[in-house]
Image 1 (cartoon, rainbow, N blue to C red):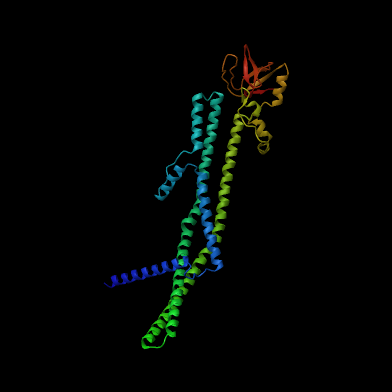
Image 2: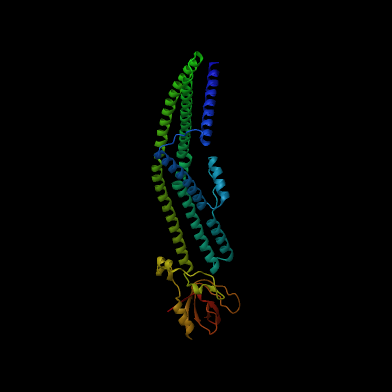
Length: 386
């Protein structure tokens, strides 16, 4: 029974406190009650914390979009995370593209130029997919997790203490309002003519003033204590910024590693396929490739742009000299080539044939001769021999 009485009293006290705060808050909004302003330093700290929270959420969400563009996949990962279960492994886009290329190359035939190139491209895409997976894992561990821990941990604590501070301020201002009203009533009673009844009223209001002053001292003390707790928590935002800076450096390093790996993979692939000049990467006089920017050419270096491992690519000047002359040259075949019609000559990798130019022939072709066989051959499949 005593416990029940205690719970009822506590519930009534809590309800009274809530009502008092609601009244104070409403009167402040209506401009009918004074509001205790926080000191400028504390206000700045609160503003800094709120700003940190907003931008941390935006950066975190956009980083997730960058690492995983598929919204359905992000939702699935979120659900598994909330269920505290590991999400099933999923093939990513570069890996899927790589597998398609390998399957296509196998279907066309690894011995053909196109099939062989598809297989090599597919293997490179798979390596890029693996690097992409490592970037996601590293970024999630070293960058996204600390940001999420701040939002779901530190800032929630700050928000909780900030709410307590707001309640303590409302209690303080409500106590100030009650004291102000009690003093006004006491003054008004003392100004009336002295009678026994009115004397009793003066005593009542004097007691009310004393009670309000005591309540004000208590609420002021609680408010000051909560303001100090909140201030100490908010001053930790500077440490949070320093920690997030270190995490940002880790994220940049992870990206740098990823892009360096991708660049190296593509450079190796370029060497395997052959770095042909853009004006010879065309079919029926329609350009199918984009010229290599001079800045990238300088970064790769002349050796990488002019060679494919042990293969020396035919230079444009040699081809032009051959086209302008009426003589013939020996050329080594770089890749297998299947003739599309009777006017072309099929080629086998590493064989040596004789090539010469014919007036009026397409700029992408030469006339090839092997024994009694003769036909057009694509110049991008050839390496002129000295």
